[in-house]
Amino acid sequence: MAPEYHVFAIAGGILAILVLASLVGAALKWWTGWERPHAVIDNLNDRIKAWWVMVALITLAFALGHWAVILLFAFASFTALREFMTLTPTRRGDHYALAASFFVILPVQYGLVWANEYGIYAVFIPVYAFLFLPILAALRGETRRYMDRVAQVQWGLMICVFCLSHVPALLNLTIPGYEGRNLLLIAFLVLVVQASDVLQYIFGKLLGRRLIAPALSPSKTWEGFLGGAGTATLLGAALWWATPFTPLEAGVMAALVTLMGFAGGLVMSAIKRDRGVKDWGQMIEGHGGMLDRIDSLVFAAPIFFHLTRFFFSTT
Image 1 (cartoon, rainbow, N blue to C red):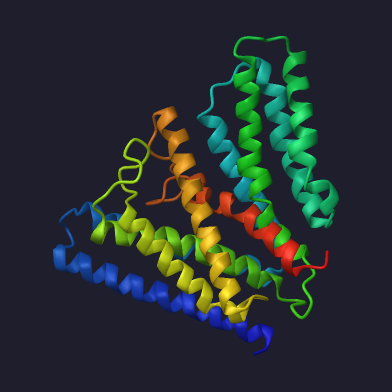
Image 2: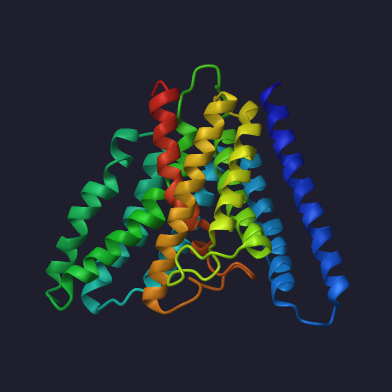
């Protein structure tokens, strides 16, 4: 099957799922009464509407080419970092470090990804930004909660910028026999991780009984996790034809990213509970903020990137 047919097949499948989901959501709303509020069904329909917008943006970026994909994820990183820092207590002594994070480190990281400088962008934030930001904060002379403040800025950069930048970095991999198809790797990763999130939500609502971590998330259940992650793993295995993997390899990769995505959701929920908030923001109706949508992806992306690079790429 030619590469363009792979793209059309995945796009057509996603479109069909969105249309079906919209019809099901409308039918459920009609059945319960259009004017009558229903928390679960209204939330489901809000999620479906938001998915139409997000899929449209990703599709447009894919159509425009690699530069648009990199800019899209750079924008997502900027928005996510802003949400993270909004909920992070800072002082005047942190202003230089924050300005450097948003307007120097973030664009440099994505610029290095754009230039395909793996040797630098793989260590730029974990090494150079890690050392540079505490120096900026120290020069301001404010020592109160210094370690907490520096660590929070570094953590925000690692999660929102470094980890997420591994998604467009997939475009740089050279995989024998897979030339010109790297956009499909991004589609595979995003589709499996987000499908796992949605399916865990659905299985949890339908079958959920035993909570995994009640103090972190009252909606994450073992039934939801096993049903959603298992189904998403099967989906990943079924999409092997769009990847450089065999069906078994695609299933293993899907299982790993769904597991990491679930762990990412738990970790980010812990941070939200620590901050006393339900959502990171209100950017997306029915979905909260940007971080509420990519919390699973930021944990899954580096693992997927490095496993693919180590086992399948020649670069």
